[in-house]
Length: 148
Image (cartoon, rainbow, N blue to C red):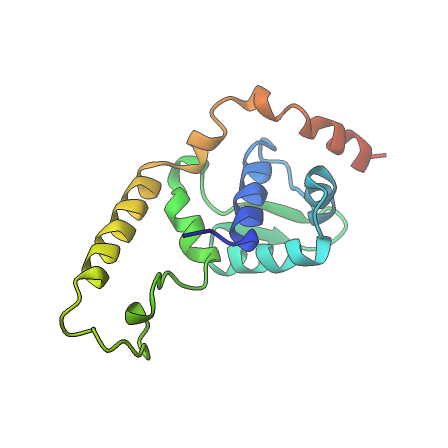
């Protein structure tokens, strides 16, 4: 299994906002900090806003903030919000066409594995990812540049 770039960007965006000490963060700042596409990041932000993980303010002093505290956002919630699906093999798809569907046990095993994956992600929060804010000091260079 591999998470998409969309999810990677979602996790990075959430971490950036979380280490910004409640200050509103702009998409431009995040895009510059991680050297990623502003337009792609906008799409990610829209999903995270719709899923009530981020909140947005418009206007000259607008930007993004966490919709709830970092301690109350599980990594699993972010991944579920940003991934389109978790069907690992065809038999897991609703319209899947597998001739062994009635006798194969692979589907159940993979479902157990996926549940274990999310059980681990749900035990960890955004706060766990940013537990050492000094690790994110490189972001302060971006903040200084954006305020000039």
